[in-house]
Amino acid sequence: MSRFSIVPSSYVYLRRGGAVLLQLRHNTGYMDGCWAAGAAGHVELGETAVAAAIREAREELGLMLAPEALSAIAVMQRTDGTDNPIEQRVDWFFVCDDWAGEPQILEPRKCAEIAWFDLDALPERMPEYEREALVALRDGAGATLLSRGF
Image 1 (cartoon, rainbow, N blue to C red):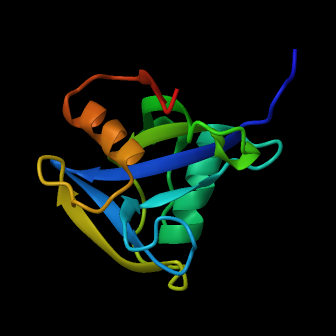
Image 2: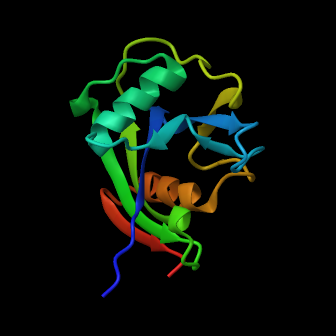
């Protein structure tokens, strides 16, 4: 049996009413020109998915989040169908309704803009796997296990 590595990431969607905060990616080399989670990034060695979500919200948006303020939307295992190690992923998607601070762009080299989008009117240009997680949130699916690309 061969084993493979999985790239873990956490995504945070701040929610205000029926809208979520998204960022317009640029200069990253991945999904540039697409709207994506307001805060997201890889889980670092020795870090939980929740701790990564809290860290990313602080680093990217300047916000303080309490662990209990995060609610799991979904966990998604995904691949592009190849054996490329960087495309073997597991993603934790969280929603947060309560935070300290005002969202601001702290990484302007990677984020051109932040904006609120109604869950019923998500932008056309966004990663399909993120759209899938936000549809689960909109539909009230609770914590959902998803897979994509298999």
